[in-house]
Image 1 (cartoon, rainbow, N blue to C red):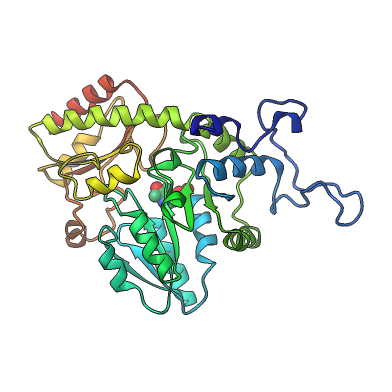
Image 2: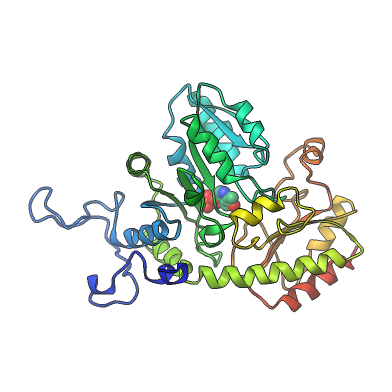
Length: 380
Ligand SMILES: *Cc1c(COP(=O)(O)O)cnc(C)c1O
């Protein structure tokens, strides 16, 4: 069946629940047993419950995996993935992974003896050079944040496989609608379901999907052992969001394309970062592995931190805020917000200039989004 059909029907059969068209929210922490160990598939709800099982079913289907685990947050998923490793193991990681991903490796798991090396994964050779006999995991994020760099999932995962390294792709920005890492050879696709999967900026959740029964058993063990499980209602909300994922992504991508065209023509905009553009260093890879180019854009003005702040402040349609992937368009200014804690010199070296602005296109009318940006760009 097609993606949009699976988004609505996979994981749940109404006739399992009195014909209820939507999966019931089971507010039950425990399940009655007829005799010890004799139950209908659920015992204690940290281990699983029917609302979560329905969500996990649709997640597995959309990523074309066999198994999924839902988590209380994207970082909850990452935590259970990293716990596949042992002290002494080494990880190769993209140098521009989500800040929280870097933090959990750097501040938490390093203390437990898991070492890592960060490289620019847009060039496979960098990864090849960084792999040591101790390397057990490759952690990639593409498109990346905030510069929308693209890494070649197929080439990276083939390399990882040949070295017996577990490959993990953070598929939050693309979503399974635009890109399916497992089909490109990844062992694990993970998500912050807080973003596009939930899609309405009203829930924090995460997910991790695989085809490998062994990996799934171990992640599921970690999910239950560490307990970063999503609440019952949160499972329902993410599931409901997923039903419109395809239609939301199409509209958000349409909007992104129009906003990009507008920005390219604007005389105060010095650079636009979007994987569809000919000048993007990995455009060909994006064209190969993505259905469309996504709804995240970054652009630069030749101005100071204060100029950047002026452009993003006081917008009437774009909401100034961190996060992404909701129906509402969000914008943010990395130099004064998400990346403000990075010393200026390092920030500039990473290409995050004072005048860099990141956009998450929602599904409003493109004309209104562009008119509001025009006001912002005239304001400094
Ligand atoms: C937000 C985000 C995360 C973390 O997810 P939470 O749900 O906030 O824990 C991980 N990766 C990416 C790419 C993200 O955008």
